[in-house]
Length: 336
Figure: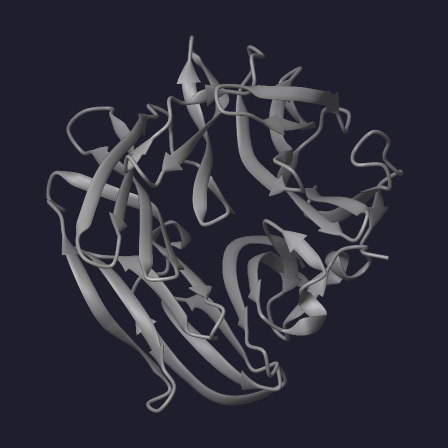
């Protein structure tokens, strides 16, 4: 069946219980005991657009999330009722503005919320931030994007501090930028430009390694098609020190590069012609293996998923997103 452009959230607890959040005309969840037996399955909201919701799990196995309708809704899973309950609403002018790709993160007693805010009357999009320090809310405009919103930005957390990686128009082309939040000043740093090529770019994947070392991958236009590009380097206060900037593929029809790190091995998975392929690097992205096709991606329906897990067997994997079969759920990709 091949690739379907849907996005699920897989939230796994310490005891291996798992909540899978999917869409099927509505947004719903399956609560699975020991990751294999369905205990509950219920609707969360009527939205089915993956640009309108986000979910996560904290260190104490609290599952929470955010979805957008005429309000910004913060929800939390109630273990006794086996359902998601709205615990906070933030109003916005939904008649004149549109919100896409919301993000929420609980860090200790703090809450971070990000989203793209677009004006319905003018071609203006802002990357917006709400922050609650446990006592009150603060707001920040991180940057003006002014690009069609095809896919999400990426958040990386380092020592309780978030950094955001995103595409922004610069001289008529999308470039990758990053900005970091300052907890003491409650402001975001001046955006740092990472790429400079005069080409269209879509589908960003970012992975933080050790000591502020980052891996980035995205699809980049070339000869009326798209290739997959890979960059790594160090994020400093006022600049990004690029170490490697390589093309990973010949031009073709590529979708959604996804970076995964396990021990010393770095993986790059991507979709080409509705099939899933994976490359492997054993030297932090300096050299890569040939692509390996996942045989299950040929006949099975597979989608993107975000894995958020406290289960011990998952902790060795550092990933931005993965690919999985939808029903039954199973992670795809060649991770030896």
